[in-house]
Amino acid sequence: MFDFVVKTPVAEIHLFDHDVFLNHNAFRCPGAPSLEGLGKKQPKVDYLASVYSRMRKRIPHNYSVDETAIEKLKEMSFVFICIDKGSGKRLIVERLQEWGIPFIDVGMGIQLGEENTLGGIVTVTTSTAKKGDHVASRTAFSDGEAANEYSQNVQISELNALNAAVAVIKWKKLCGYFDDLAKEHYCAYTIRSNQLISEDMHEA
Image: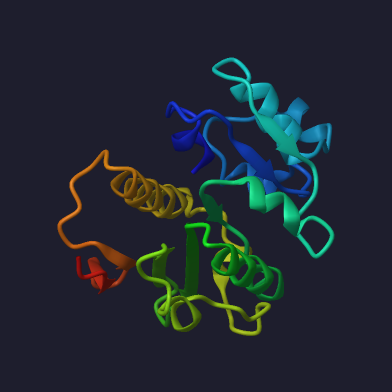
């Protein structure tokens, strides 16, 4: 997602992440990191800064958004939420809605099927000033109780890319860049049936 957003003419991009750049998240990032880069065990934001500083200046934050840092989001005009810890996500969602800041939450649930194939769903949930009452029922706030192969199987970079692309397309619709007839605030792609559905429409 960051790869798409960094190529737009937004004034600033703030990246909040405290993860170390290791093999499992390298497979979710665009490009091909070197073994030397992985061996540094550097903060992921530092790695991304070194790559994308070739294109533009930006502000990385080597920490997650929690109770001590949540106020930083008040400065944002739009937020993408890409985290799998439900408790932390709940805090962000509740505060953003309280402050009236629009956001998009991306989610993914991947399960191993009986024939040893992967199935599941990729979701994009949007909250705006015009519609946000659906978010509580559409967003996963659990901390990983359900089985999810996402945390174990790295061969799903195309699903990460699809999730990011659909989210950024929706953001660009909200910005008036793309046509938006449906005005959906929830979109889901199901792997097994190859269906992309749009629900929770906002009636103009």
